Structures are given as structure tokens and as C-alpha cells.
Image 1 (cartoon, rainbow, N blue to C red):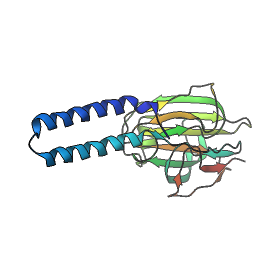
Image 2: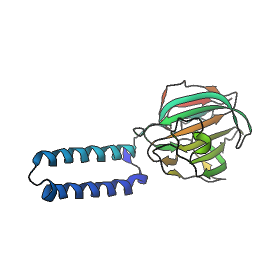
Image 3: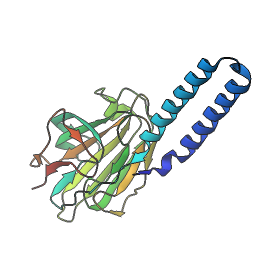
Image 4: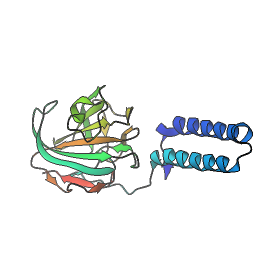
Length: 220
């Protein structure tokens, strides 16, 4: 396991602030209260541990298969439905949505291998990630990857109520490989995946996904 580069500044800053707070408590605020000093130290370690775990990147055997769509994120499947995708396809698609809690790994990965045919970033609101309007009103990105056989998969990084920054590493025209990192969302979020209507869905509501590993669907 390694720690993601997107967390370096936050982890270092948090560590220094917590260290300064504990030193201040030890020498000045609670110098005669060992219980308070101990409780503060424990609370600081727990907080720092939570932040560090958020930026973890576990070592995994990634799934690579040209006819499969792989989960772009860790989380829980909260939506599987046929819907109209009106930004790019402007036609019906199968939507699979993954909710990422603050305890999930928050690296986002390319669901298929291909060429990035479309990319757009939208600033927006910070509704809770499971809100129906979060996919159209929240801060988000839309990415479309076209596979070698011409099939296109659209997915969106969507910021949640806690998330305040979406990171991406792709651009239009760029070739990408299934399973490679394409971005990161900080502190709670959601990813929507839009598939062709004839795609065979391999997950169900409530399933836990692992980014780069779980097979969401089979393309025809």
C-alpha cells in the first residue's frame, strides 16, 4: 500500500498543526493535567489516522479485459437504472452509480481502455452525493472513453456534501488504459457510469465495488 500524492499537503499540514497543538497543551494549556494531555494525544492520533487512511492506495491485481467495464471507484452501488443521458449521448443509457463514503479509497480509475473523446468540468453545488440532482447540479466532471470497437462509456466524478475538490488527469484525445488512475475526489463523493442499453450489468444495488477490480458490466 502507498499514500496518494493528492494527500501529501493535507497530511503534512494536519500533522504539523496537531503536533503544535499537543505541544502547546503539554507545556502551557494542560501542563498539570495528564489526563487531558493523554486524551488530546489520542484524539489527535485518531484524526490523523482517519486522514491518512483516506489517501491510501492499496496494492491490487487489476482486472483488464477489453469487453468488460470495470468499476472506476471503490464504494457501494446505489443506482442501477435505464435513464436518458442528455449531455453527450442525448439518448437512453444504463446508469450505474457508486457512492464513495469518506472511508473508501478515493482514487478513480479508467473503466475501459480507449481514447478520451469528451471531457468537461462543471463547478457547482455540494448536495449530498445520493441526492437525485447531484449528478446534474454538483461540482463534477464528465468523461467519455471510446473503446477500440467503437463502444463509448461515459462516467462522471461528482463531488458530495463534504467533497470540495475534484482532481482529474485526463484530457480529450488522450489514449488511456483500463485500470490506470484518471483522478481523485477528496472526502466523500459519487461516480456515475453510463453504459449502452445492451450492456450486461454484473452488479446489483448494495454491492461493494473495488476500483479497477470489480466488473460492472459486459459490453456486447
